[in-house]
Image (cartoon, rainbow, N blue to C red; front, top):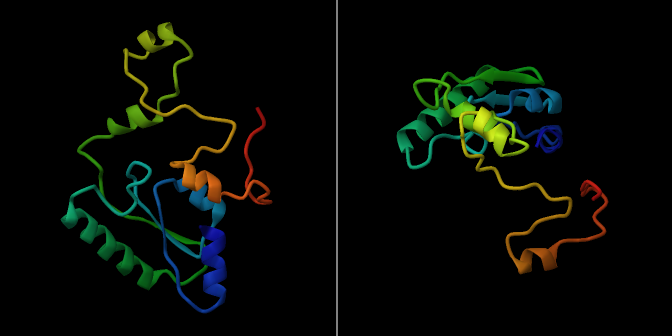
Amino acid sequence: MGLIARHVEAAGIPTLSFSSAWSITRAVNPPRAVYLDYPLGHTTGKPDDAANQDAIMSAALSAMQTMGSAGSMTTLDFTWQADDSWKDRVMRPRPANAQASARSGGHADDRVARHSTPQYQSEEDAALADPACPTCIFPQA
């Protein structure tokens, strides 16, 4: 998104990127970004919590007013829950075997398996995909 934001900015349109991945956003260096320490996919608030979403959007737009230089990034002061225990589930590496799972406290790992080929939500999506896409990079099996 940072590359797209830089092109949009070059056309004279201000942009603001939302991120829950601080290091990746720093590496991409969009013109302006707000970082929210929420799980990935929740960069504009908690599901079904309109007050939280509104507060985040308001804080982000307020922050944008003071972000003048390219590469500015501000951390928004919101918390997903009272403690950081939610990170234990999403940041834990996948156990190599059942013994490793037992050592990790028996937590289930609910991440989906990774694939070496593109995965599509539907057959229609697969049919629309360009197999010769020069910018699509997939690991070799």
